[in-house]
Amino acid sequence: MRTKPIAQIIAIVTLCVASAVSAAPSCSLPASIPATHAEKAGDVRNVPIGGYLLTFSWSPEYCFAAKRNPRAADDPTQSTELQCGASNHFRFTLHGLWPEGKDATWPQYCHPVGLVSAPTVKANLCRTPSVGLIEHEWEKHGSCNWATPEAYFGQSAKLMDHVKLPDLSGLTRGQINASAIRAAFMAANRTLPHDAIGVAANKGGWFEEVRLCLDTGFNYRKCPDYSFGAADADRVKVARVR
Image (cartoon, rainbow, N blue to C red):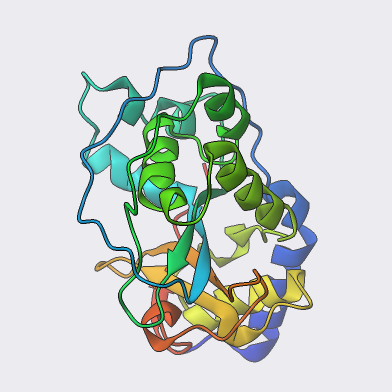
């Protein structure tokens, strides 16, 4: 398939930027929110922190995948109803703020932590619309550099609020180059460098996440090769917004 003409790419990116405000979800929380529970921790890795990834998931692709592989019905913390049900129409959601190592090995599950409180879960569900994922992010990633869930999610929220999330609806027809996604983010965020934008796609070539690379002071930095993901010329598909 031939690459889109440059004029068409510019027009699409302009549309994405013009619609950036609408990328924020219309979020309606349920009356009853499930309680958190501890997950089974993975391998403990207390390695030095060399930077961070601020990771945003493209919700339409997540919901499409969830229909193919529904979560266990007896585990309400893993329900996809909040994110993928009829009440909400998320675009980008906050997957997490991940400490990175000084090489391809990252810190995780650095020490045992308590559960995220119900008020903190509720305060973050419109950014990360999954009780189970909120608990997971705190245990796996937050435990490696923050004293409390409130400090961890507060830092994540502050960083998210400084990013203008482009509406990628104009990129959902056919295949595009990964460079078009980077271009949309750069156009919406003038201080965001091209080489600080990691693009992740699944094995089927569907766009899943953008991962912004940060240094230890939470400033943008060049992504290491293992975090950059898809090359600019790689072809990806973007799931449509409902």
